Structures are given as structure tokens and as C-alpha cells.
Length: 495
Ligand SMILES: *[C@@H]1O[C@H](CO)[C@@H](O)[C@H](O)[C@H]1NC(C)=O
Ligand SMILES: *[C@@H]1O[C@H](CO)[C@@H](O)[C@H](O)[C@H]1NC(C)=O
Ligand SMILES: *[C@@H]1O[C@H](CO)[C@@H](O)[C@H](O)[C@H]1NC(C)=O
Ligand SMILES: *[C@@H]1O[C@H](CO)[C@@H](O)[C@H](O)[C@H]1NC(C)=O
Ligand SMILES: *[C@@H]1O[C@H](CO)[C@@H](O)[C@H](O)[C@H]1NC(C)=O
Image 1 (cartoon, rainbow, N blue to C red):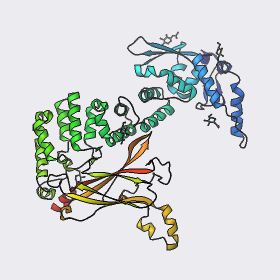
Image 2: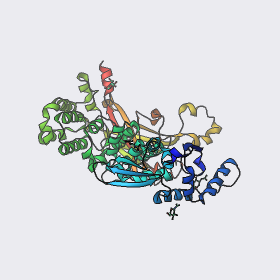
Image 3: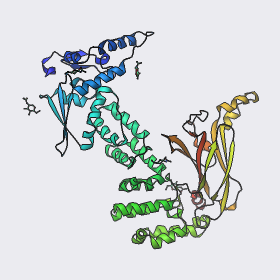
């Protein structure tokens, strides 16, 4: 072996392997490797170093050609000092890659250990099928520093990057995954990424996946991916109040189909059924489910109390109910429902032009006694609004500059007041859509009582002035306003 027989020399290969990580490493037999790399690459690399030292000089940049030579070196195996035998576990499949110790060890201390302690010219690596399938790609990354990734390759590549301690690739794949949650894939990929994130304990990736699934739940419920979600993921989703979907009934029906497909243990079914917010389902639908849903018939006993509570909620004004019962529990807490009785879409063309106002109606509340009463809401959007404290410091002559420095704001107030509003706090939620990879996705969700001022960061990153702002879809801002009656204050009043 070269490293055993040669005199170890400390060399800086940065100039040679211009695009790879520049780690000084101790290796022997470097001359052998240098001899195999086409000599024409050396002057270019040397030039580059000079440029770095001498500011003001012109850069002759041949790093693309260098990458191509490294790729050819791997493909042709010239000067290879190790053969990697990649065996797919539980099969006879073997793939052999002629590689170079020096290149493999540059970015991976795992390869360093493996290769420097070996006593044969072949190293056997056992990999599961998905990893074996992308092993070439992975090794090519070590030679060339770039990699093309498909949605279905992210996890196996991430596994390899983690196993061999190639941290730059691992980090790049994390970014790739969080940035590609909404990409099209025939079978869906977010659920498997979530499961992988749980398995490796990557909480950032897990949270990104959960948020994506929560904010895009209607699409997920209709996709083939829905049936494949695990018990744990199902229960985590059902607990969330920030789910964006058409209605609670849509969620119940999706739950029926998930249970039909997965046939989970009764315990799981009961836990899941208890997370449904029955108070948010109109009584006419609850009657039907109670008599006709095989799932509800089968598990009726375990949710009977919740159904009873829901029917009580529907039978009178929540104000009456709250005099006697605790209404601060999740079955009376709305999620972000897109159906029109809860709010309205609002598309604002050229949002920076001037203030815009908009009116829409919602039901007074989800209870059977309130659903037929309408509330009219006035919404005002100001593209450049200044908080009072800032405004008061401006003199009249400075008013001209005001328009440039304000922030977007939305204020939503009822058009009329009504005794029915007593004790109800109307939580407003503005869902902001943005374009990502040519698609509309939920980008932000802001909760407030009267004005987005309370949220503090409303559209701070949107840069609406810029025509190319990713928040603008054909020069328009796409919003959806949801109004959610909360009865918390009633409890306080009662005490
Ligand atoms: C050299 O060119 C490549 C693309 O051809 C570029 O990515 C790299 O940043 C350039 N390097 C320098 C030092 O200009
Ligand atoms: C590799 O070796 C072959 C001959 O064995 C030669 O034709 C080819 O140019 C070499 N490739 C490189 C990149 O040096
Ligand atoms: C080579 O290493 C293997 C295990 O790593 C060992 O079993 C074997 O005896 C070694 N052979 C020689 C010739 O040192
Ligand atoms: C939801 O996911 C689908 C499919 O991945 C995508 O087309 C759509 O744009 C997403 N919508 C939102 C609101 O994220
Ligand atoms: C309602 O319940 C939630 C959680 O159960 C709690 O955080 C909140 O303080 C309660 N509100 C009132 C007014 O009791």
C-alpha cells in the first residue's frame, strides 16, 4: 500500500482539487496520483492560487474543466488505488467502483478510517438497495462537488452522507428537502421525509414536513399519500389547530378512509376519533354520521360524551352554554377552515398602489343556533402603514417620505355591532399564498384579533414593491381571511 511504504508528506491539494474541500491531509504516494491527472490541469490550478494571493489580477478560471477531469478520472479509474465493492444487502448484487483513497478521504473521515486501516486493495461496503442505487452519484459528488438530486433520491443520499460523514452534502440535502416539500411527485414524498426525519431525530425537517402537511391538508387528504401516513403522524396532525382544510367534516371523512385502509388497533381509532372537533360539524351532518357512518356506529360508545357535548353546543347560543359548561376545549376550537361560511379569499391587485377595502360575510358562529346569523366584516389593507408611535414623530414636511417607510397592515372589524358578540372573541387568520416552483403554496399564516399589527411581522419579508416578489402571483397578493369565534372569554366572565 502506498500509505504504508511511501514517506508521508503533508501536501495542500487545494490548488489541484480546486473544487473540493481544501483540507490538508497526510498521505503517501501522492506523486502517483499527480501523474495520472492530465498535466494540462496543473498550470490552470496553479494560476488560480496566484490570483487569490494577488488582488487586482485577472482570474483565469478553469474550474469547470477541472471538474470534468475529476469526473473522467473516476469514470476511467486511472491511477485508482482502491476498489469499492458495493454489495446490496440481502442480494447478490455487487457494483465495483475504482476510486482514489486521496479523494475519498478528503471529505470523509469514515472513508479515511476505512481505507487507511485496510490491508487489501478492495474494500467491501454493504448498503441497502436504495443507497446502493445512488452510490455512484454519491461517489461522484466526492470527486466533483456537485450532484443532481431527484425527490426519491433525497433520503438514500442523505443516509449515505450521514453514514460517511459528508457533512456538506448532508446539509445541502436538508436544504433541498425543506425547499421541495411542495414539488410534484406521483406518489407524494413529504410523508416519507417526515418519517425519515423522525427516525434520525432531525427536528427541523420534521417540523417543516408537519407544517407543510398541516397547511396543505386538503390536497394531502385527497392524495394517495394520505393512506400511507403512520398512526403517530395522523395523531399529531389531528391535534393541531392550524390545519388548513375545507371543513371539519372533510377531516372526519378522510379519517374514515384512513382507518378503512390501515385497519389500526382500536386504541388508535378511539384516540383519533376523540381528536375530531365535533362542535365544528353542523348538526345535520352529525345526525347523518351518527346513523350512517359505519365507523361512528362501531365506536359510538367511545365518543358518545363528545357527541352529546357537540349537540348541546348546537342547541343554544354558546353564551348560554358557557354559563354552565366549560367551552374552552378543543371540540369548540375552530381550525383554519376555507369553506365560505368561515371567511373569504381576497385577491389584491397591485397591492402597493393604495389602500384597499373589502367586505365579506361569515356565520356568527358554528353552533346550530348561530350558523344562520350573518356578520359582515370590513377589511382594510394598507400597503404602507406606520405604527402610531412612528407616525407621531413625523412633521408635516416629512409626510412625503412616509409612503416609503411604512409596512403592510390588515385590519378586520365588524360592520355593525350586535349583542350576539358579547363574550365571543373573533380571532382573525390571514393565510398568505405565495408562488413556489410555479405553484401556489401557503407561505404564511397570521393570527390576530383586529389588526395584523398584533402579529408584528405581517408580510415583512414580502417586498411587495418588487415586481418579482415571490408573494405576488401575476402582480396580485392572494390572501384568505378566516374568522374564528372563540369562547374563552366566557369562562373568565363566569369565574
Ligand atoms: C469559476 O467558474 C465557475 C463556473 O464556471 C464559478 O462557479 C466559480 O465561482 C468561478 N470561480 C472563480 C474564482 O471565479
Ligand atoms: C486513462 O488511461 C487511458 C489509458 O489507459 C487514457 O487513454 C486516458 O486518457 C486516461 N485518462 C485520464 C483522465 O488520464
Ligand atoms: C487483513 O485484515 C483482516 C481483517 O481486517 C484480517 O482478518 C487478516 O488477517 C488481515 N490480513 C493480513 C494479511 O494482514
Ligand atoms: C398543496 O400540494 C399540492 C400538491 O403537492 C400543490 O400542487 C399545491 O400547490 C399545494 N398547495 C398549497 C396551498 O400548499
Ligand atoms: C383554555 O385552555 C387552554 C389550553 O387548554 C389554556 O391555555 C387557556 O389558558 C384556557 N383559557 C381560559 C380562558 O381558561
